[in-house]
Each structure stands twice: as C-alpha cells, then as structure tokens.
Image 1 (tube, one colour):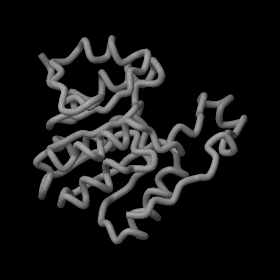
Image 2: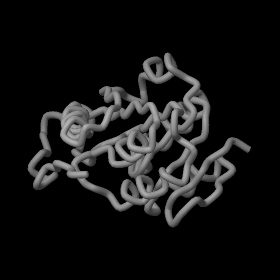
Image 3: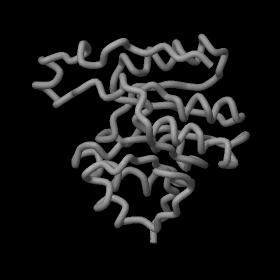
Image 4: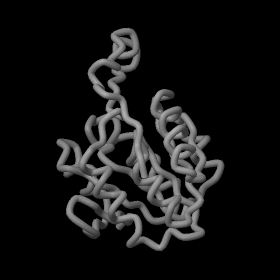
Length: 176
C-alpha cells in the first residue's frame, strides 16, 4: 500500500482556524499509535463487520480494516484529512466510506449505530477530546479498540473502562 502524506504538518497550520476552534493539523502526521492499531486490526474479527474509525487522520487503521474485509466508515473533523484519506483509498483500490464529522455533534455517528467495532488512534491529546469520547463511545455500541501512546489525558480516560491490552499501546475497552 502506498500512502500520500503532507510533507510537513506545520505548514498546514491556519491561524484563523486555530483562533476559531483551536484546530491544529494533527491528522497530517503518521503517528506510532496509528501504525500500532493498523497492525492490530488483522487480529480482530472485522471481516464483514461494520467498523467506525474516529479521528482517522491519515486513516491507516481504516485502510487496514477495509483490506481485512470490513465495511468501514472513516471519520475526521478535518476536511483535508477526509479528502486525503479518500484519495489514498482510491489510489490503493480500497473500498471504504469517509466523512467529515465532529464528536460534539454525535447524531451522524448514531444514525448507523450500533457499530461492530469502533477504532481510534492517538485521540486523547486534548482534555476536550477525552471528555467528548467519554460521552460518545458508549452510544456507538460494539467493541472499542483504542491505541494510545501515553497521552496526558489517557490515564483518566481509561479509568472509566474495563481495559484489556491487545498489543503494545493498543487496548480493548468495555464499560465496567
């Protein structure tokens, strides 16, 4: 698989977008946790199952799930991420759906719930993300698999779940 990526995420910073919504182009980096989650996807039983990826960014876990036969909806709140992920899927002849969605507007996620699997990599880099995910994830159904590299808000977030490690930095979450 070949993956197009922006050459420098810092060049994508838009001061107006940051001032409005504290938006930074985190999506443009190929994070180690995204690679770890993509590597773990083949160990999950996703073939023929409905998979939702939150905060997909470059979407490596979504692409891996689709290659494993899953019916994937990859989501991100950055339109540039959605467009690049769509282009990467097409470039690699991988079939998946991609949408620009925000966690603070849960209705579009809930329309297709329950999901069989909900995936996310490196989502806990800001406190507002952890708070929004704590409200959203229980409504989505299915198995939740999160990869995290030890972000500051991860420990408090994981305390709300029954956590089972699947691989280094990759965790299955269940409500206690």
